[in-house]
Figure (cartoon, one colour):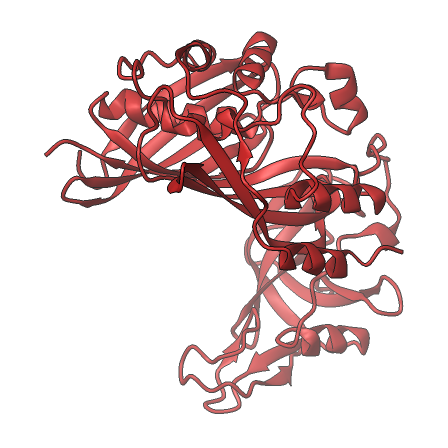
Length: 127
Length: 296
């Protein structure tokens, strides 16, 4: 795990079931995350993933790579294009900082509409 | 009219909300539902929760009512009343001071950090609302979050692209102190090239400082408006407001030595001699473009 190391690309299929089950598992009951009619009425193309889920996916992407011993200290994310139902969300990542056991991983999650999420995850790995 | 900035200042002044408790203590069934939905097979979450779940514990729930002193709720209500009825989250910066153990009961406090707007965004006109939350176990701060949402008026659905958009709808240049001399020139039929007030270097596009000598007092020279095509692209897609595709965007090497981008009306080729033409869009805006020279 050195600066410049890339994480393996990871694809998430954002099926309607995925969008809805993650919204409910994160206790986010905003209608735009489970009701397509209302989502469209509110100017959206379809239901879309909620931010708590994006945070969870970004964390999972990094811990899947770093292993279960890594401790997550910080997840900073910025949202761009919504990730709608039926989108494929592709994650890319790279180590951008390392000082002893502390690492910062830069993460991008992209759909066909553009960058859904860009951010950094700070982790602490075993010595 | 609601004075949004004044209301924001009033809410920000109230400081931190009173602690609001999570419905449930940190518990395995909710952790397992989360892991299942996210698809996370991390084996370590049997006695502690995934850090990214921190916000989940204190979500208001299906029939959640926001506390009266909740600054985000208060700000959302004001923006709703002002016509900004839709919301999307844009930023979440979470710091976890430690992992949360099953059985711990969280509370959260929130303050309003910043409200900025109105901004034109891809979704429509809106305001960015930033809050700061702290999660507590007893009197120990265990996690923090800076959270930003965009509260916006949904933009009207864009109609099918018209075959020809009126000129008035053309994309307008953003004019600032560095570039206004250029657009002023176009209005009076002069193609102006920025010239350093210190060393005399010609430069384009304009900037506040000379890359050669560092002087910050630019002047300009009026160009003869003649040059040759240095490079070009033919734009077919996507549609551009005020333009009919395909159109040519050329990089013109002026006789004075600098290069300038512009639309070329004519069959493009490298080295083609061209001259500038000015097209008045309206009283404020005249656009320069290029055409092949008659005397070539």
